[in-house]
Image (cartoon, rainbow, N blue to C red; front, side):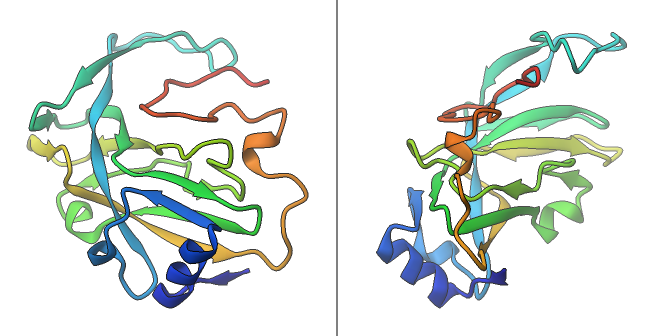
Length: 184
């Protein structure tokens, strides 16, 4: 597996191995692509409740971001990307926070950093962001702001079956932030 350069990413886009909608060339760096915050977040409806991951219930409520959203100290929300992506069975990606937000104490993913080969193959999908603030102050998040970056990797061999076609895949064809789902 090798990290793709900007030239590799542009070639993969040209071949249809990577689709990004909308794609803004100015967001492509030497080895990563900046992505933007969408216009919806899921905010927890409860605090202090015990949650069983084997029986997740919807303890989130959706909020549209009309311009901006205030992320409070210690608050956790699920966000979405403005971009929809699609990866071939030969390309995977990794999401990482941006330094400018990290310096404000904002994390954009807790554990789900890998975007598997074949993600978005059925139709380009948004990414759900696991946004958490360790800043002791409130921070504005703006719809359309650059919130994370994607690095793309070419697999040594094409995957036998892409993410969207795995029977255990739970987050296929998403166009908004999705709450946790039970294991299949």
